[in-house]
Amino acid sequence: MQQKWYQSTEVEVDSLGQSLHFYMETIEVSRLSALAFYAAGEECYKGERFYWQNREKTMTLVGLGHAHTIQNNAQHERFDAVEAEWKNLTKNCPKGQSELQPILFGGFTFDPQNNVDGEWTDFPEAYFALATFQLVIRDDKAYVSIHLLTQNHQAEDQLEVLRKERDHLIHAAQVKEVKTYTKPDITNYFEPYKEPYLASIDQVTALIKQKKADKVVIARSLALQFKEDVSAPQVLSQIIHEQPESYLFGLEHKDLLFFGASPERLVKVEEGRAFSSCIAGSIKRGKTAEEDETYGQSLLNDPKNSGEHQYVVDMIVDTFRKNCVDMTVPDRPRLLKIRDIQHLYTPVEGQLNQNATILQLTKSLHPTPALGGVPRKEALAAIRKYEPMNRGLYAAPIGWLDAEGNGEFAVAIRSAALLSDKAYLYAGGGIVADSEPQAEYEETLVKFRPMLRALGGRLHE
Ligand SMILES: C=C(O[C@@H]1C=C(C(=O)O)C=C[C@H]1O)C(=O)O
Ligand SMILES: [Mg+2]
Image (tube, rainbow, N blue to C red):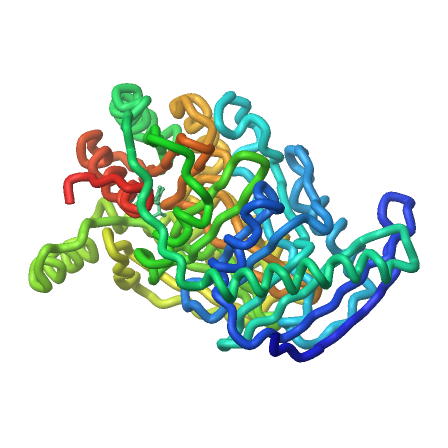
């Protein structure tokens, strides 16, 4: 195996009164498919894996096994608690080259106050992992790191076992690279809350007309039953091939895989510069270039969709003003076209203030009016009242951060939870005073499409 040593470090960590040793070792690997590496962990690391690729496809991340997890069920403190624990764990880590950094990957659920039982019952409100085996692919270079946290200050034997396992995983990935996956077979398809959903749109528009809120994002789910168990690599391979313009993510927790292909950035921090995106307002793609252009123009000129969009811009710009200097925001939205849908899109960026961090920004931004509403408190109360489900990680922040404060979180829309032979897909839309139930219902059908296609289904295409 062609590999180049990069770095091997041992640092002391004080965790919950315990003194730990944090061992990190990184090698550069010549050629590796991220999905094949993920799939190589099928037997030993199922339930403890993650996959991430940014929209630009300049960074791919895979984690196999848990060297350490940071999780909690706190209502208000969950962002701060994750931040404090990660800072403590990494405070002695050497700074420098980004591909050598230990990475924390995970997500915060949409609403820790939601206690509706279902597929998310077991899932922590904040769930993050430092992988035992971390693959980072940047600029076509692949790096595999081993992470080990132990009380043992002579961990050479443990490390040797992990090195053998790492080499085995890399080898398996290089051999398996050509594998192709079939789509799952769906045996049953149902929309559990179609009628309550349609009714809720009328109830929410009534609320908005009474000036009790300006905008509320209402979502619903679609349930699928498969002929047999569906594997994580099987569905990830579909979205990798079908959704190249989106963030791609997969996060496993026990028997659940949450995965998706989202166009929406919540926040990215790179060397002190922060980026976000306002994405709200939607229309389908046209069947011809002319029809697509006509739809796009009508979206740009539509007052209902512009209203939905502006709430998001106002809130994100306001949050950036409090945390950044030197901001840039275009005056008018442009179109963001992805395979099934086009959106109104306004990018926002700025220079982060000294004390602002990616997790503090995530905490302030979530949920933006693209997924919650305006005012936030009233919108969340309406969601709790009218949505009979638990969103779990749907519409919530998912992503990574390193030890130096860089990182990126996407908004986990166009997503689904897979549990063995069942899947739940999620989609919603921004409800404003002039929303109509049937049109909103159809907008959710379009938003279900990416996950439905990946899972072997079709909807009015
Ligand atoms: C809520 C979703 O998407 C959000 C709502 C949109 C809208 O209502 O126009 C558009 C993009 C997203 O901000 C979803 O995809 O489930
Ligand atoms: Mg909409």
